[in-house]
Image 1 (spheres, rainbow, N blue to C red):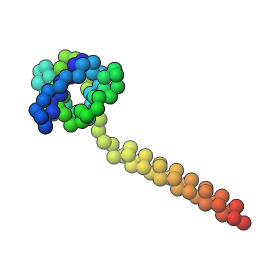
Image 2 (tube, rainbow, N blue to C red):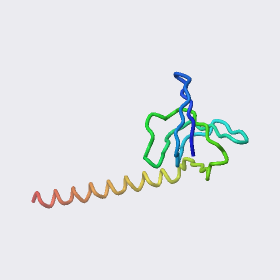
Image 3 (cartoon, one colour):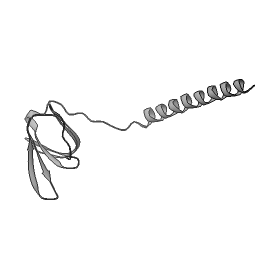
Image 4 (cartoon, helix red, strand yellow):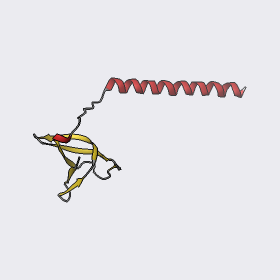
Amino acid sequence: MAVTTHEGQDNAYRTYPGVLEASGTIQAAAGDTVALRLGELHTAGGSVSNVSDQIALLPAAQIARIEQRRFQAGTTILAGVGAFALAATTYVFLLIIAITNAF
């Protein structure tokens, strides 16, 4: 899919052909176009640099799927507690080894 971006600084439009994936925040949607504030843009050749925060105009007919991601506090807290427990266990284990080798 070809994606056109709009750069607010110099009010220029730029087209990127062969886009496979675009990520960001939807700013607006019309019947045939979705305006997306870009986070990343990927083509078959790899990631496109310097497109973050630009507005991309995506043809709605060529969008294969849209995913919504949400922050999940419970999962994040659980992962943090698990990482802390692993670090604390490792610290205690190394401390026991250091004490037993000192004697």
